[in-house]
Image (cartoon, rainbow, N blue to C red; front, side, top):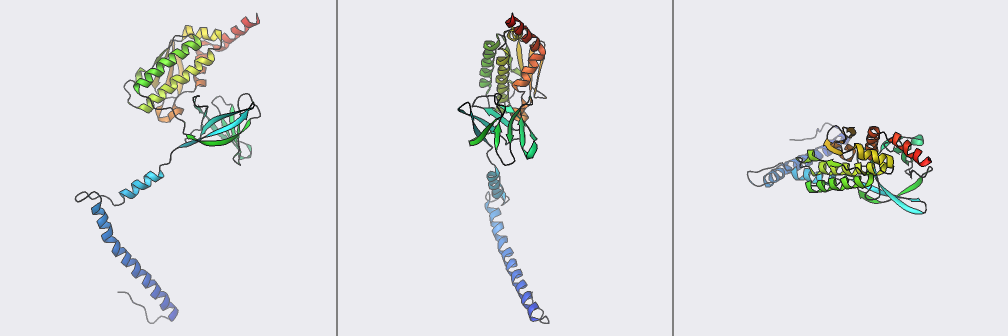
Length: 296
């Protein structure tokens, strides 16, 4: 089948012979592979249930390509004490949480001078700055110059824990009690729209949203005048799925719109909830009344 042109010179013949040997070897390997592939196809699933022989490979590859989302704990020195926070950069939006039970904060990311990366809170305050060389500086509210933060350990990615229907009910009861002790307001936390939803992740986001709302009530409750207005004007917190994350107030009800598809970024922050409440009950006016009473 294959031959060498004897009219060619010796160098050309040597090259041609080498090429023919390589071609013969490739042909033999291809022929030997045919029964092997046929045997694999017959062996996957048994007779009458032949499967793609590469299914197992694809499955194995998919498993090896699935990497656990990992955040990191960072430590910093402040006032002679070692503090820590968790920074999660695994998703589309950076997430931050102080301690083990604090609110998960959604950060925005932008470029700074010298190719630094700046991370800000929802209210625009800078909270982190990452240098081009990798160094991280944390800016707590009471430290204008910031504090150097160092990576300490891996941590689970930040997301609200899944919740059963029973867990969601308990979360509503606890949130109602916390709001009452913080502000004196008797508030019903209504999650009834989640009653027909059998998605533990969505229910977990609803529970997290109610807890986040209580943080806003607790901060506002530090003012006696604002507490009185909350007790007078707020009677319900309604948690529903919608075009979130949004917080708005209407007819005595604080409405929290959630988007479970966005994860924790799909629920309004305590800052946004606090702003919605303050717009409704005129916190600034109440605070002025507090200050005038103190002055007198």
